[in-house]
Image (cartoon, rainbow, N blue to C red):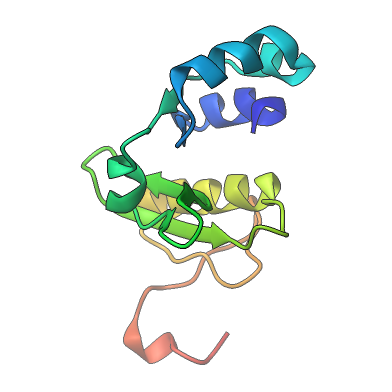
Length: 133
């Protein structure tokens, strides 16, 4: 996420990273991890797991939050939710594509079909179009 932060900013997105670690572990991370210097967005601590539970990211079996990505609209609606298995890293470019598609659909009223990429046409969001593309 940190490597693509500017792309998110250009799309009008704000990034918050939330995990169940303590603020003390965040402090150590900031002091010893070379990758910490890349992070330009807030890293929030959720030691009570309330935020993680609220957004469906908490795994009660492990006691930790899963790697979960949400895109939340300015009016508070969850527009995208993806929970990644622990053995699978997230695809930041797919998250950016989804955000671009959401911006496209807001601006045009058209849908973004499967595999849609910026610059491609959208489709009418009409029940009669279901299954045609």
